[in-house]
Length: 88
Image (cartoon, rainbow, N blue to C red; front, side):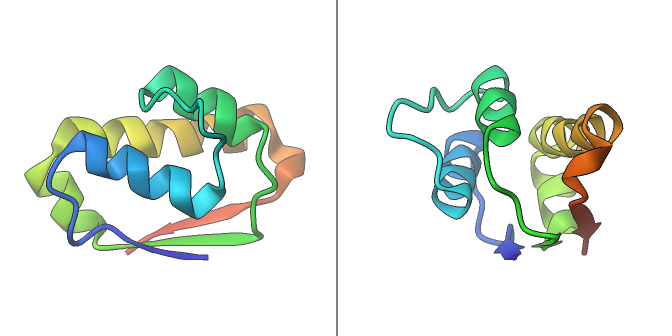
């Protein structure tokens, strides 16, 4: 799965993009706690490639760190999921 972060202008757009890419339910709360809950319940691909990570990191550093932290935590807490995340 390839996710383009280049056009993200705010955190709400980021949450909308994540919801669409991962097929989160309509009740997804568009916050990081809800993201974590939905992410853990999702069928994830073997590889997720985030394109434009440097843009998100410089334009919205807190959002980038929250997103990255969720995926770092996921790989630590649920290694059996086996999803590799590339930050390009």
